[in-house]
Image (cartoon, rainbow, N blue to C red; front, side, top):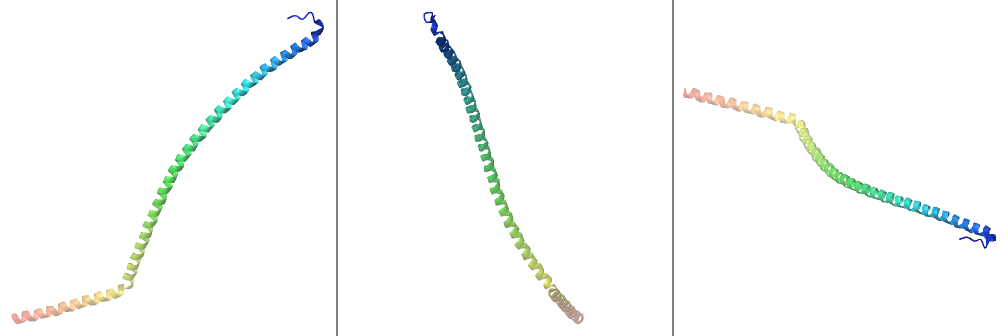
Length: 141
């Protein structure tokens, strides 16, 4: 529109037009800033969701690993317990064998003396019986 009738109001009209132009510029800048902020927010949400998913996957993997390791630990504890029982049994058997060996070594001289006496007794008995057989053979013959 042309405002020739009010040509004296040119300064005010120019100022209003300048304000309108400034408002449009600021509105465009605000709209662009809002689009940029929305885009940044969407990117942030996507990154956050991806991060949450990755962390949840990591937690799941670590939980699985922990469960496997706990199972291995339980198995290892059972194996250790069984080995300790076996070692105790072997130690007891070793102690029993040691006692038996100590008894044998301690009484070796006594037992050897008894065997020697027994052998000597058998020789004497054999000699006596051989002599008795000779006597019987001489009488028969």
